[in-house]
Length: 417
Image 1: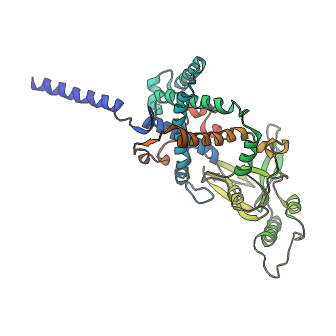
Image 2 (image 1 turned 90 degrees about the vertical axis):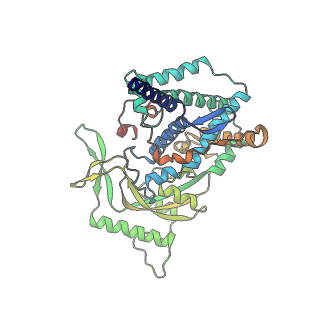
């Protein structure tokens, strides 16, 4: 009888533990009124944030957290450095739920059906048509299919609020606001790239296709390129008394020297970029952000490898690991003045494909700040849990990321290209 009672007691304890695990362990991280972000929501959002960061850094999710960027930061440090912007995204998501209620918006049935169809597709692909099997796999990332449904719903409500305020494609934004955002959030710069290590030559591969092949420079070519680097350094960076120019004509302008010597002439009228907000930003962009107009800085030209593999360099085969990079010369970065209305000009279209989306994000953040400070009386409640989940501890989401961004079924190496 005692054995039976003991067995029943053990079963009761295990059952109680299981119930507590499913209902008690997923604690609230942030709340705003009746809306909340629990630990599963937080981990899901963090895993998606990290996957987007890896894509922005152009590195594979298999890259070691201790791999270093060209600025010396490890991948882990770069991820953790984005925490403030990640938390801001969470605050925006929570306030969007409140605004959805305030504006008395409705969730269309078609949108609800789309959410469920998307979740079902992801479950079927990664879980073999079993939500239970999918959850076993997604737990590596810290969330379940239920979490996805809930977050998708919250994000859909946020999009509906944004469309209500600014239009589906930012068409409700006034020109004055676009100009102001452009002038305060974008910069223009030009780069003279001097490659002292290799050059690209066109060759025909076994399929008869023209491809670019890396060919090492000769000793004479390396010397010439180094002389140009020295000349430009003396002209733009640190002038030395009595220096004799070996290659360039110092009376020529930066623009003339760009046309004569730069190994990258893709954008002769300059490049545009938002000011960098992540720790893995390229050297040239980071340097440009620190310059005054018409000033020039010098940085290393680094080639960063997002995937590992074996590469042909001259007659040699070199093995590269994901996260490795090599220096192949110098970049002379000049900060240029903004050209009025550049975001609407054909010659700069490569830089402004997401301009209205970025403008919408900026204006929406201002709208929420104004709502929080002057209208709502709501305050985000921090339940003291997010510090236990640093971004670098969350595995980058490679499940529904691949579905949402058009690479479902591709390998990580393919989807990160």
